[in-house]
Image (cartoon, rainbow, N blue to C red; front, side):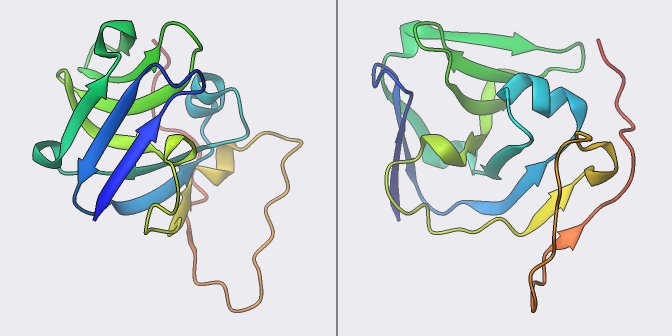
Length: 139
C-alpha cells in the first residue's frame, strides 16, 4: 500500500511504501502537550518503507535523552513522525492523505487523560484500554 502524508502547509511530504501497524492513541500528558490535543494518534511503520519526499530541510526534531523524539515542520508546526535515534518509526495519522488502511486499535495511558476528556466505549468496541498512570519521567 502506498501512503502519502504531509504537514499543514504541505511543504513537508513523506511516503510509506507498505502498511501501517499498531495504530494507537496515547493520552499521557507528554503526548497531549506535544500534539496540542487530548491525545496523539499514530501508527508504527517499518523504517525501510518510509522516506521523505520533500521539505526535509524544514524538519525540526525534539529528541529526549533516550533517543526518542518527534519530527515536525518548522514552518507550520505539524508533527509528522516519531523517531528513535534519528530514524522514523511511526507517523501521525492526522497528516496522512486519504485512508491510511488502519484504525486505532488501542488507547493507552488513559489513566493520565485530561480531566476534561470523556472516553466512552461503544457497544461492541474491542479497543484495548490501558488505564495506567504515566510511568515516564518528564525531561
